[in-house]
Length: 303
Image 1 (cartoon, rainbow, N blue to C red):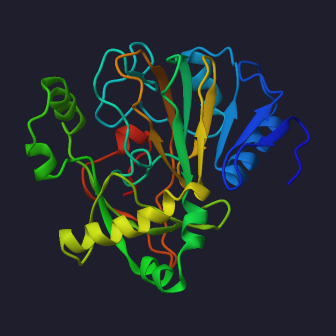
Image 2: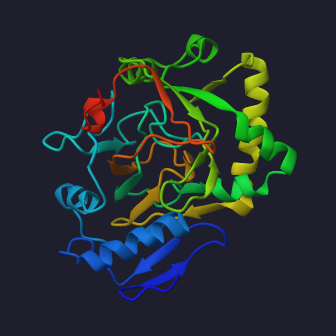
């Protein structure tokens, strides 16, 4: 695929590209936005170095790709910016150092996420993304056929064993907020990308159980499938600089924020774009089990 309005520099072999020659604070033409979207679907995560964006500009850029969600279904937003999730890791112990796809516990997980770097530690604090489409393609046929048939329950509720561990008070307080409304959704383990038609593994850190299997059986199968997602061949690691913006396709990726910077400050802000209801390879849609996410997505629930 060729691009006329900017330079695309692939960063890793299977995922990720840096976009050069685009000022995200400018009034970008529809042609540029269309090409960015095509690049997003192709490369799964895009990087823009040294941008001069504020929170308002970040939201404005996100709106060019669809309806913007509220900051999070349960976690409070940035003051005066209901669309912005403020992640200031110098002031909180809650960190996203686990493999996940954003907000998969609702029936309409985000189309994409846009993350802006405000403060970055001198060393550490990188983020890794994984391509869930090439992970699916890597599966041996027998595992691919199994995955095609599976459905998984995703939830923001922590399992009993994890919740029972003696945790610091700060983490307990954050978890109380995070689970203040419990959501559960049944998603296909393999979803069809609505734009590319590609099949990808749709699992990650919010999966709680495979439908029809015990918790032990579920954990074993999810761990096996997840090992293909996180193979180094399917990943890219980004070394942040202040002003960087990352835009990833939440329908075809997982990511992991590496917590290797101790008590140094790492401050980023995230905006998410409303997505559609995932569809399985046989055309069936995800189903909400618990929790109403319509306020988060700002999309009325169909009658």
